[in-house]
Image (cartoon, rainbow, N blue to C red; front, top):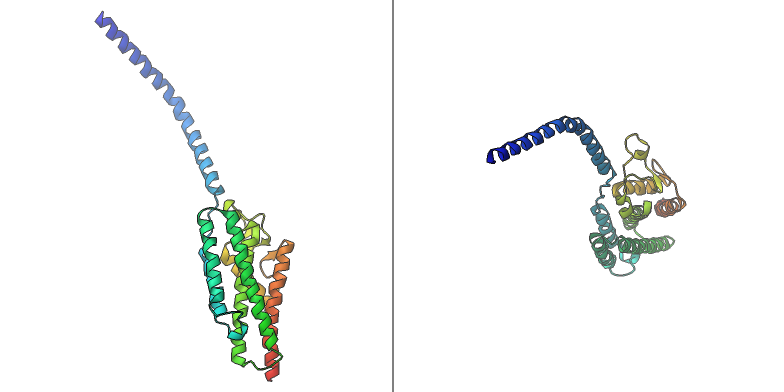
Length: 253
């Protein structure tokens, strides 16, 4: 009886081994197709994941705006020299915190408020500079320094606006690959194989610099009405600053 049970057990084990051996060629045939499908799925998921752009260039730009404001003469300030830097730093802290805790709605609101404060400060300082021009009491070096500071501030402030507003803001741009819904047409978007390219702050800084220098679009074209209006305002501010320098130079001659 025991011998019969052992024989039956050995027979079952042999049948199982034979079945496994019979299934092995099928699995081997299907394995390349499975691996290819898995690799394709992983590649599509990798390509669809947007890499978040760095925020530290925008943070440095905000701090530079505060430092530039402190470099203005006292008669172009609307308070102590450190006031604008303190306000920018105070508004920058909740902006960083809301980004860290993943609250894009609050982060966007804090960014709007921060940009608005810097824009108002720029306009006030520019108005004070223009008001001193008819008097003719400003020293040429002092006027040149004030105009240069305001020109650089103009570049940084509007670059921050472009970065904050384009395609719903930095959080929305990080959430999806590519830049298909943007308000600007960057040259990289027209190249083959760059479908997932997305601009970061340096690209908007380049846009702001060219707008203040050429008073018109260069290689980056505005596509939406708000982008065109914002570039018009930036060009107007830059033109007023250059006009101040030109008027002073003519007056000196």
